Image (cartoon, rainbow, N blue to C red; front, side, top):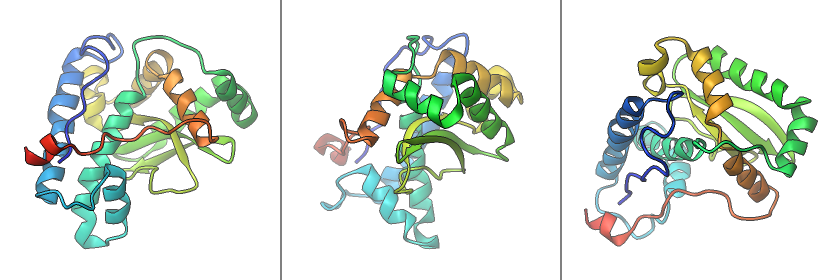
Length: 218
């Protein structure tokens, strides 16, 4: 039903911050395993399943019986959003995002500090997010598979993976070094800017690719 999304860059394009070996394992094995498990759980696609976002929101309300479906669906979405949050092409935040950063954090350096601190202090696996709500930005983290799209008041702008498989081959247990290098060299400011514009009503927020007939038949 759902397909593993292709990366928008080559496997070695994020080096030296993220090695091609890490990206191969992370995308081709970890992310692919979540996609396979999700499709196995869903079986033959019911007609009413139109988006991964709907699967996540519905399974989040389903209690313990739907927990496995939620965990795999959310991890498929989170990883796809994570790939979008990175780029090998350096850029600066757009004007709207720069203004929001200044009003919410004081300046980019303080936002960086808040982002890294949140990720370092997060216990166990999960994700660290830059989110928008009512024109204000904040940094939050979520545990395990939990994401932001189930939080109606928040709009995700970027996400960084805190699971050890995201950084252990390159940084071992030094999560702080990973987060600092990731923020400084890979953060996709153009994507974050477009997400903020969509949250402000200008444009459409990123969504996971809808299931296709070929994917349903696979």
